[in-house]
Image 1 (tube, rainbow, N blue to C red):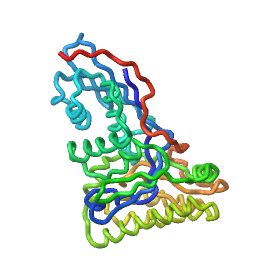
Image 2 (image 1 turned 30 degrees about the vertical axis):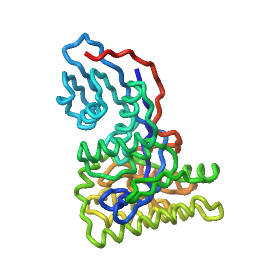
Image 3 (image 1 turned 90 degrees about the horizontal axis):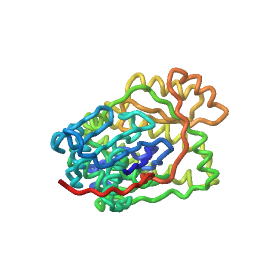
Length: 332
């Protein structure tokens, strides 16, 4: 039996520049972190006592005789890609799917990690990220960027650069005290809306010259945000103000990024004392994160009283195997 634990990610700057059709020509960069909310994938070989050979438990239960019969596209393609047979797979998560935190990619990374472990093989973080990207973007033909798979694989607070070469991951060197201060100044709330990221990406996937310029500016903001974080002499509140500017810029890149309800919530947050914030993920719903000084946080919580508050801490580990019991498996 194998159990993997894979974190969800929180993206601050550069989202949208990690889409291959953009960064191959223009380059791209994102600033993101993983945090202490996880998905768990439990995988073992299914005993041969049943009239089905594979059992899957996620938001629904599937029992099939052949991988081609599996409805879940990521599981079906992963099993075929890695030649997995007679599997029992269970998925659990701390937060809901389709909520802007890269949950589907975290699941894919955790599943691939578990499959390799079940085979008695080690897959490094780069391989897991690359194969998760290939699985979702090529085999499943789902629209979207690359940052989610990379963040889930590597973990930690990183700058990820994209270009014709693919991607590079650079951990941000921030003092522990400053990183803790940033964490303490961020508050996350669940809007209650969920959506498929790929659907939002498709609706926003129109690359006019104005959108191109906006994405290029968003890439530049990654540089500015990094300078604020790594320089202890800079006022950390500038990070919050930059989030506000970036969110307004992000909304110009597609009609489905925000909604009237989300705009109203965001405006209430700013009025309550937040210096900035954003909707996490591709847009359309999910989680709002605000940068707000500690003395104004009670005011913000009151303004968001109808939303669920989600406390969190940054994490540094990325996907990992937390239980490993090797199995002897003889193919039929």
